[in-house]
Length: 262
Image (cartoon, rainbow, N blue to C red; front, side, top):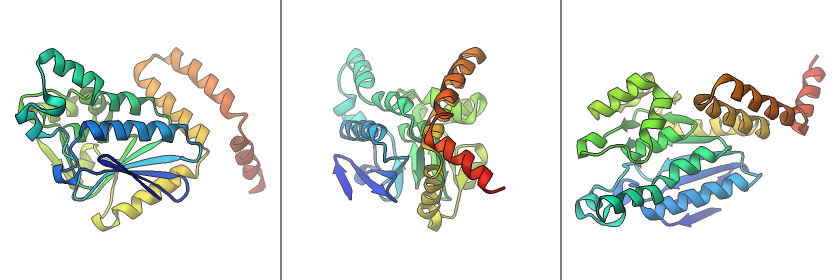
């Protein structure tokens, strides 16, 4: 069953996969206030739903997301209206809700990059845990072309995915990187044939969903913590997480299955 929300659709597939479609195709799925509210609310519900094991985010039609609405920027309307301080507050209370929400999630998130992911759309893909794409996938940290900076947190997420030097290159040049070149650059984890993109994304989601969910989610949290903290903090966190994981039914079942194979 598909849930239709403002500028977003959500559907449960294969019983435990939540597929989210950014649905603002007339604007190449540019991010709007409506999309922000729909996306963050949907992600929060998914985090609290034990039946959801993995989340897929994709774009409607031929784009993943074009990022900000340039016409709204020109008109100084919507999220781009007001003086400098009002704009600062609009970013903090608007689009920055997305990175804060996504960074808090423990459920695995896959970006199925079915087309252009530029500006804030590129950053949204970087906020996901894994990215899968094809020859039609296009990435660009294009803020400088419009005299802007990545106000949605792109400097944090892009650097985490491709490293400092490559993030600097993308930010300073605002170049568009496409297809196989984007995969080689490190912007995608998986590169598949265009016709097979949805099928391969489903297969990847199914593989992740088949693994013990508590272990996957805590490992994800630990990896993100490792990016920000020192060794001792991570060892303490992992000791606590392992104490939880080692007493789950999933662990006991996996250990029994290991010995049954012998």
